[in-house]
Image (tube, rainbow, N blue to C red; front, side, top):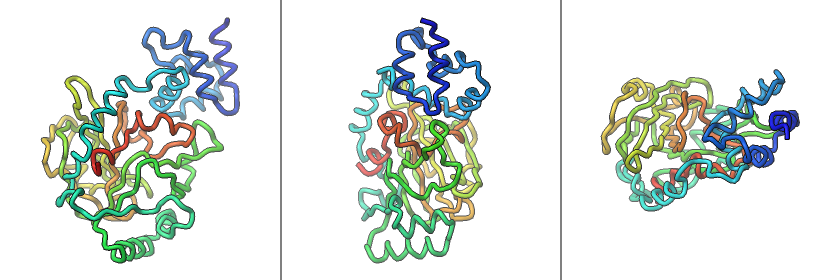
Length: 305
């Protein structure tokens, strides 16, 4: 079998079947611990295919190929799931009072009939804020949650067309949204080290961002991304800073500096590191739903319990 030629034939397809690609690669690529996606790129000689591959998130692509090959997409995934369950609710005190003591409601940002979702997609600040305020007042709730893996209609721009299938969109929310007033101070639930600070000022982006690395077992790490912060929060730390647990470390930003959203925190967990976390997806494709829980685990287990 000409392994490179067979791989190239699969890459010539208009839509990639990552299960088939992964199964194909399982017998030879990555056998020495190398990257499946690196093998795929090395097998390709077609400039058009190269452009498609370059547009893909290599972390997501590697995970999809490993899933197709029948492998764990992240080492010790089962152990980390057990750690999450054992620490359920332990991040509730990222707010004061703790979320477990607050009256919570879930925002509908998924359905096409959600007036709030439509106002956010249109970047209509006044309508969005008015609808949100009315909802919270009528319900008597103090904090609203935007669920992890919620399928949303608000990601309407071309930025959300999938690089893996141009006929699909990224529409599954990979983080947890916690809607609180601008200026709300956040307390770090678990000690971490700053690995990146960013200000992402495009509309419907993150605004101020901090990314932290945490040790969940000796020598084992995961990462947390805190988005929609004030710019001052992002500028207040530098790479390598160690932040102790219970430190007041960031503040939720208002529209003008949080990407033009109703004030809220986007909290996302990542099991694999990125060379640049600005490229880490905050929303993902439905076609990869089976791997999102291990690649970007559910923060609500820690935050809400």
